[in-house]
Amino acid sequence: MLTREQLQGVLITIAKPDFAITRDERYATGYNVRVGMKIRTALDLSRAIHRTLLQHEIMCHNSKNAVANKGHISVTGKDNLYKLLELIPMTLPTVGNWIQFKQALDIVSEGKHQTQEGLDELFKIKGLL
Image (tube, rainbow, N blue to C red; front, side, top):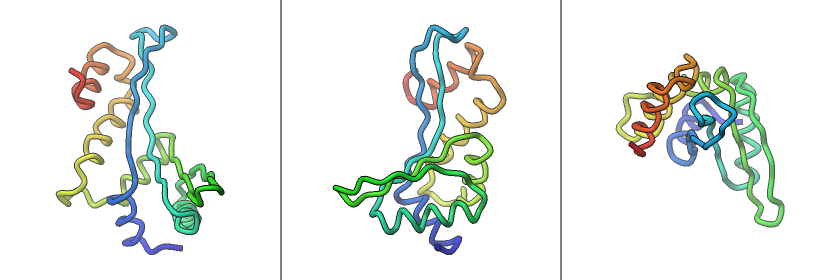
């Protein structure tokens, strides 16, 4: 189990927050938006991170690659992602990706990604517009 401060360090240094915008004609805007966070690290550390996230009531998926001795953790779902964001001190200069991620998560949570304006905003955050 990790302390809160250790978990914050892991999240700031090795976690990869991301959102994907993919073409999908099933949606009114023609795009699907998915948000999530991934961590790839040594298997032992991965297990400790997984237990710590569960302790903070953040549901996550933990898988392993036994050949490479690596663990993979992914967190999805807006409630879990907002709990994760509460752990990150947003005043640090090293959290730029997390600030952009939070902006994207806010747009998706409010349903604005289903409009052209919201989608354009996500493209701006992603740097594609």
